[in-house]
Image (spheres, rainbow, N blue to C red):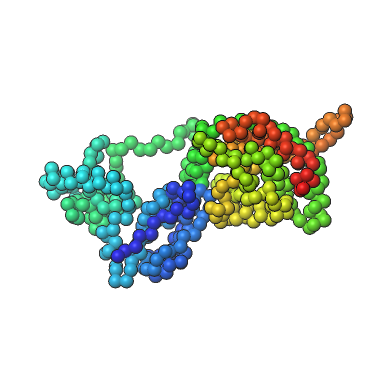
Length: 419
């Protein structure tokens, strides 16, 4: 029998994905373990392996199709002795049982009460308007897909399948729908003669929009801000890089400082979970990395127990994979706190949105020359502004303040974070 290949769930939270690229063609012989496609999720592009041997009979979902639900059939394999004709009867768009039963009852009622209407169905080219509430056309899932892709009005096609069901062969020669009575989707609002370009959202951008909207609507944020003297950390970084022939970034030290601060303030290393708090025994830092079309947050796991050099090497490898779209779910999921650094863009200060289900994110700006007062004298200093966003359901103001001041102390006395 034919073998269905379905859109896989490449992570526990994945609901849909973009079929970015087919690596096989119809007619190809494949074996279990062969790479057959690339799927784009909200975070990365991942390869899909075949689970069975067979010949590719049909690529059901076209390359580049976005928002393909997990579980939808994307291709069909044929076993020995089968041919393309066996695909015709395949119900390749599985539906929930309740929906299938309801539609079957509808179709049965329609066939019983009005058999003469099926016989008088229009033949291809005369599209008739469908009123709201009219019963659905009796057609196979494959016919529906072909009709949708070709712009054919199924209500204007006479079905030759069982009970008047429209099947693939009925669509051969059918004219695409030219006019429709449905109201067209609104175009971009015109502002005088201002040119407007519509840019289709990527899967990543859709997920970012959904999750951050949810975060701002459901997570009660509060913000704490502090100025941090960076002179000692910058001097230590320069010394270590020169003496050890390393290329540690300021961000590597900040990751370590945040992790060390959370180890000292464990009541902030938590997540809100309905009727309880989850209190973590390890600090996993999610680090914001900008990539084409969006943002990903690879995770440095156990950052509180790693040295700055190890953090730097791991962060460079993860950032490289992120920009190439090759992160695995294990490399970007989880995390107990996030760090977002816009200092390289010259930003002085910003408030970051919490990344659910985490309870805190630290936003840091650029280290800039400022005049400060020390021992009653005005002196120049390199100062960075850091803002901590907290989920008030999990972290109270005093705990958040303790975490941020501990972070400040570690950065201003960086030797302490190495102890």
